[in-house]
Structure formats: structure tokens, C-alpha cells
View 1: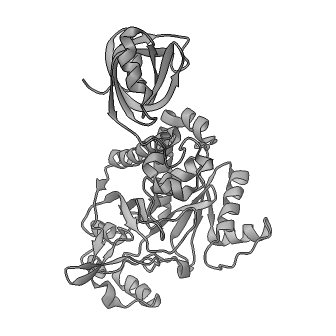
View 2: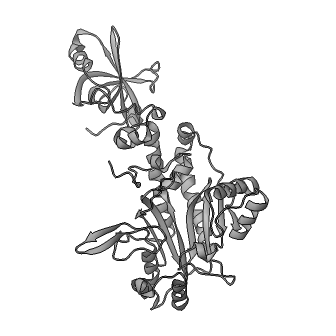
View 3: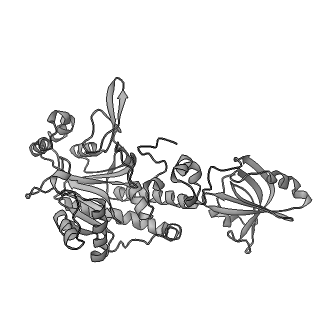
Amino acid sequence: MKKIFVSELEKYYNQEIEFQGFLDKLRDLPYVMFLVLRDGTGKLQVTIEKTEDNERLIELLQSATLESTILVRGVLKETPSVKLGGMELIPNEILLTSESASELPFDYNKKDNSLRETRLDYRFVDLRRSDNHLLFQVATLLEHSLREFCIKNHFIEIHSPKISGAAAESGAETFSLEYFGKTAYLSQSPQFYKQMAMASGFDKVFEIGPAFRAENSHTSYHATEINMADIEISWIQNYVEIMDFEEEWLKFAIRKVYQTFGVDMEKEFKVNLTDLEKPFARISFSEAKNILKEKYHYIGEKEDDFERKEENLLCKYAKEEFGTEFIFVTEFPFAARPFYHMLNEQGKTCSYDLLFRGIEITTGAQREHRLDVLKKQVVEKGITLESLDFYLEFFKYGMPPHGGFAIGIQRLLMLLLGIDNIREATFIYRGPTRLNP
């Protein structure tokens, strides 16, 4: 028999079925025993009257421990007085399919009573909570919808290598590993390979996959292994086209999530759904710094980038002035950007950051596709041309004007659900002090 889930039980009233789940609760009363079994979609009451016919079942369950797994065969009854879905399963056979230890490492239903590190140590137990089941259902649909939009718009999906013979271009540190007598590196980004795809005539590409950042950062929104969605598009005229695409792309995916899980998200995570009818706010970097100074009387220590407090204030500004929780900030100084970002006539980068609910979620840009200009910018950044030989080869035989961006899936997810830490939005978190489980 196929596994029947709680979510589909209404189709089986007055039928004999087989149901499997975790033993969530057990109430042993003088004349009746109640079990509550749980699967990933809900809970089901099993009712066992203490009759002579049921002595064997009662004896088996009296020694059963919570969180053990149980198989029940019996008749499903529609019983409106039962609080769990107005139904109950009347068993004629019960099997204990696995036995749990008598004491769990922590009470996963009381999240706030347990240290986060303990919960991460026993992540497989922590994930049994209903909010975590919802979180990863949302994550699944979010990622699927991002991919769906790309496919509808005729993108090609690529899978770039995660082991490279050269360290990547970004400022983040790399993880190195021994590779058959040589030193190799885990990929920080598919950036170079996305651009190679542009040189290959793949007009529009996307990739959803892991990236590795050897940053000794212990913030609530950084991790050393992340899941990234990357986009690159050829034949653009300016970076505004990239921003337009990202706005449409994100709105499509988030709407899909809200349509399916919006009610549950509000109930479980107490989040207010963001208004997707408003256009994302757009201001330049210099405008942003002026707003921070004049409106909020705050001057950050970084002249060519933003601090976290500044990002918070800019999101506050976007909500107050434009009625949106998203804000694009454009034309960053070259000092804060990688060598391959195109520069405009004023020497500013044709780039942007997208901020959402107080945190940067995207960096995007038009890339410099002209080899002579690209080489000049490499040298200006103090990088040797020889170290980028393999990358610069992509530009020797014709390269379309192009641009793109990347977004961290877990960071977006934590912000959508109002989760305060990326550790909670990651299936198995990796950070500077965590390699297990």
C-alpha cells in the first residue's frame, strides 16, 4: 500500500487503511487510550477502547516511547467531536516500526527553551517542528518558481564546476584543498563561468547551486556554504534592464509562494506579506548617502559602501516614501566593486545592490565586455593579468554586452519569513565553528 498522509485522509472515511507516523502524544485513560500520530502534513488521532479484544494492542503501547514510529491498520471514522480534523482511526493492528530513546536531547516543541547550538547539533530532531516543515515547503516552491520564470523566458540552465584551479575574483576568502598533488579551490561564485556562457552564445543563463565563502563571519546572515541563484543575460544596453528583470523575477516567485502558503506563513511565522504591486524603489548611491545624512542624520564609516545600519535606514526610507520593502541602490564607487563591473562616464559602476527588509540580498551589474578596458580595470585593482589568463581568454573572440546578478536563497527565505538567523533557514548550516552534523 502507498503511504497515506494526513493531508489526504478525508478521501478514506469508512475504509480500512494503513497509516504510519511518529508517536506524538499518548493518553492512557481508564477505559480508553488515545494516540496522536504525526507525519509531515499533520496529525491523526488513534482511539483504542480498552476491551478484551484490544488487550494485545494496549500492552504493546504501554511501553512505547514518544517519537517512536508506528504503523496502524484500521478503519478511518469521521468523528466531528475529535479536535484533530474531525476524524479518528480505529485500529485492529498496530506495529512498532522503530523505538525512540525515552528522553529526547531537547524538547523540540519548545524552541525558545533550548540553546540554538544544541538544536543545530540535533538538527534532525529540531526539524520535526511544524514551522520547519512549512519553511522548507516554502523554500521548495520559492526555488521552483525562480527556475520556472527563467524557463518560461527561455533561459538555459547551467551547472558550473565547484572545484577550480584558481581562486575566484571576489573579495571573500577561498577554501583550498589538495587536488592530486595540486592546490584547488572551492568556488565562491559561478561568475566567470556565467560570463563564459555569454561568450558561448548562450544568450540567457541561470544556475541554482552551492557557493563557498571562507569568511570568518559570525553574523546572523552569513554562512560559509550557501545556495545561490545566479543570472546572466546577453545583448543588454544597460544595467537597468537587469534590474527590471530581477524585479519581475522576484515578484513572480514571491507571489507564487504567497498564493500557496501565505495564510500558513502569517499563522506560523507572524509575518506581514510584502506589497508586490508597488514598484521597487530606485536611488543612486550618492542620493542614498545624502538621504542618510540629511533625513536620518547618520554618516557611516564607509565612504564607498554601506554599513548594516545604513541598509536598515534605506529600507525604512523605501517603505515610508515608496510603499515598498525593496530598494535598488545604483552606481556604486569602483572601489567597492570587482574589476569586471562596467564604469559609466562619471567613473561610477553600472551596478546596483537590492536591499530588502534591512539587508542587501543582491549585487548586480553590467559587465565590462571590452577586453582592452577590462585589462585596464584589472590592473587598476592591483591584480596581475597572468592570474586571470583563463578568464580573459573568454573575451578574445567576441563577447556580447551582458550583465547579471546573484541572490542567496537562504537569506531571501529568512527575510520573507521574518526569521532572525540564517542558521534557522538552512537545512544544515555551515559556519566558521560548525562542521557537524
